[in-house]
Structures are given as structure tokens and as C-alpha cells.
Image 1 (cartoon, rainbow, N blue to C red):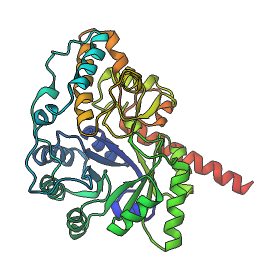
Image 2 (image 1 turned 30 degrees about the vertical axis):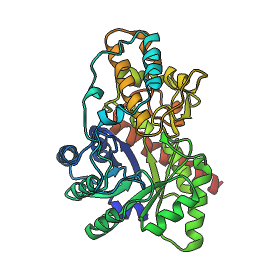
Image 3 (image 1 turned 45 degrees about the horizontal axis):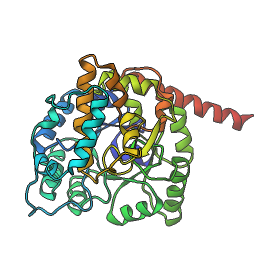
Image 4 (image 1 turned 180 degrees about the horizontal axis):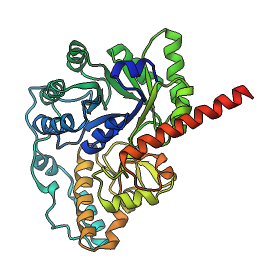
Length: 380
């Protein structure tokens, strides 16, 4: 396949797989798709990023892949003082702590059990750290650099352009697209409300053609990747007939054999229907689509003290879910009800665990079948 996006990143089939799991990224790229490593969790440091990218370099067989980092537009300047997780946790109101402890207690979870979230670590949400992340990424053969939260900082765009690496950004509306174009991005990821985690309110079916038409009318040759609810090749084909240059996917990779999600979470995802997700602030403090569970149900309930803003809500969620997973590992079946994950509505179409390679192959076959059907209608 030949189009603007394929030419930019050097891939033949424009199926983009966003994943926090390096194994998934490498497997997708080896299979002919385009893996994008999501270095967007709070624990990712420049040193850890080097370890992850070194591993991908050694296992991707020379195939192209990309990198996604999160640099919020309101990130503090490089002169800001360092902040640790324990410093932030100390600012969480006691009422919220008690609400979580009571909730976990109702499911037989010992809140004093040690988990990784208890470790004090520096929060890397400052521009100097972000710039080091960009520098580290550009030491590797990255073919696309994506910013996940708003407009990329100027240094990211300038450094990537100097290195000949295209820059992408996620958008949830036409207005977002205009701001990203003004900033100088090379690829737009039009993410509809069906998508996992942080998403807007406009559906993929509306957002993609709206952004594509705006670009066509302004004469701008910027490829658009469709995102949100896409888990099959026929959906990818539909998006590309609307003008997208490819598909940006995420949820479909959570249940693959290579994914590092907890086995109990994988089971819940495979059993989920498309209506078993909701947009809620319960996970991160910002509206995000996630799997329905007792966790987000409690935060939306009448006894809830209300979700805290980022990053405080995320700190509460991260520790609570680690405790729930550990309880499940110890045989506490009741704790499964609390497990959740950022996931899109497309999860209802995912019913069995497969290898990432198999998923890529099925995308290709499904895509080809969809095109054949369309050609048949035209020839009839």
C-alpha cells in the first residue's frame, strides 16, 4: 500500500499499534504493522526509556516503529523543584484515603499489603525531563514521534524535524487539529470518543471525515490516522474510505499473548461487551474511557467524595488496582470486581486471546475482504 503516511514512516500496511508493552510493539512491527511504544506512564524515566528502546531495537528485526510520550501543555518549566510520589500522596485528603480503604475492605483486600506503588519515586512531569526523553528517543531509529497530551512542545518539533523524524499528535476535534497544524505537526491522530482512556465526545465516524475535509479544503497534505473503536480490518477499511491514511489502534492489543496486562484483567476484557465501558474521571482524574467495574461505580456513586484532579486520582487508582490484582493472585475472587483498564468500545468485538502476529494478519485479511466487497458492488 502506498500513501502519505506509509511513505513517511516506511511501512507497507498502515496499521498502527499503540502499546505500553514493548513485546507487543516489536511483534506488530515484525508482522508488518507499525508498533508505537507508549512511554506515557509516570514511572518512565529517560534511563528506563533507553532500556525499553534498546530492547525493541534488538527484537524488531530492523522494522520501523514509533514512540509516544506525554508532555502536557501546562508542564512546569525546567526550573521547577522536583516532586516525588510521597510528596503528592501527602496532599491527598484524608476523606479520599478513607473512601478507598473502605471500598477495598468491602472486597476483602488488605490495604496494608505492600505493592510497587508504595515506592517513592520522582514524578517526571517537567520540561527538562521531557526534553531528555525526546533526546533519548532520537538516539534510536524512531520513525514517528507522537505527543499524547495536547500540542507538542517547541523543542520536540524542532529536534524531530532536525533529525528527519515526523511528529504526530492526538486530536479529538477539528479545533484541536487546527492548533496542531499551526504547531507544525506532520501526522494527526483523529481519536473519537469510542477510544480508550482520555478521549473527547465526537465519534470517530464524524471526526475523521470532518478533519479530512478541513485539510482538503485548506490544501494541506497531512495524513490522518483514524482512532477509536477500531479492532478489525473492515473498520480500518471503512476509515480509509473516509479519507484516513491508516488506523491507530490500542485496545485490541491488550488481550494478545504478548501483552503484559494482568491475567484477571485480560479475562474481564475478553468477556466485555461494547457497552461495558464508560467515560469517567475515576481512573486518572480526567475523563477517560475504561472498563466498567466496582471501582468506577463507587466513584460515581452517592457516597463518593468526588474524583481528585491529576495526578492525585491516578495515584489512588494505581495503588488500589495493584492491591486488587495482588488479592486476586492470593485467591480472593471478590477482588476481581474492582479490576479495570483503560479500554475502548471496540473491546466488545475482541473475544479470544491471540498472538499479535495473528491479529495483524487478520487485520490484513479482513481489510482485503472489505475492499473486495466494495469492488464487487462497483462492478455489479
